[in-house]
Length: 211
Image (cartoon, rainbow, N blue to C red; front, side):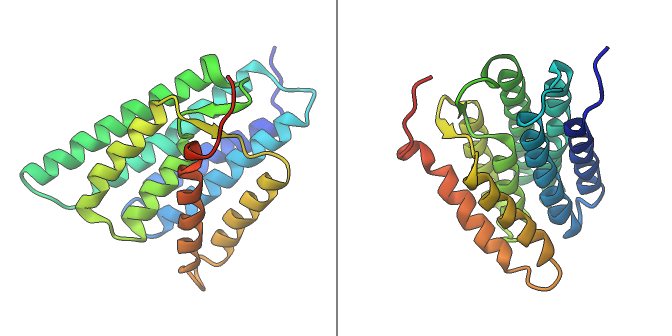
C-alpha cells in the first residue's frame, strides 16, 4: 500500500488553496490563494526530490491537484469576466480551450515527461499565474481571450522550458513568498512577479536541451 508522505501533504494543500481560489474567483483573494497553491506545488516537488519515499501515486495526485489550481481556476477566471453576445461566447470558448489544453498538458507530463530534464510545453503553474494576473491585476478584459489561447497552445507545444532547480528554485520561491507577504501592503509587487513570468515565458528562445 502506498504511504502518505510529506510531499503529499503539500500536494493536498495545493489542491485546497486552488479550491479556495475558485471560491474567491470574484475578488482579489483569488490571486493570493493561487500564489499559495504555486508555493505548495513547488514545495511538494522540492520535498519529493529529496525523499526516498516517493510514490507513483504521489505523481498522479500532484497532477490532480494541479488540475484544480492551475487549470480549473484560470478557466473559471475567464468565465467570471463580464460580457454579452459574441464576447460572452468567446470568453466561454477560450475557457474551454484553456481547460482542454491544461488537462492534456498535465496528462502528458504524468505519462511521458515527468522524468525529462526539462519541460515539454509551458508548465501549468506559470500559465495560470500569467493568465490570472493579467485578468485580476492588469485588468486585461477582452485581451485575456487571445492571451489564454496563446498560453493554451504553449502548454501543449513542444517548446522546451528548463526545470527550475537548485538556487533558481530558491529565488523563484522567494519571489512567490514575497508576493504573498506584500499582497495586502504593496500589491504592486505583483508586477515584478509578472515580469519574471514573462522572462520565463520567453525561455524557449534561448534555452536549448536535448530530450
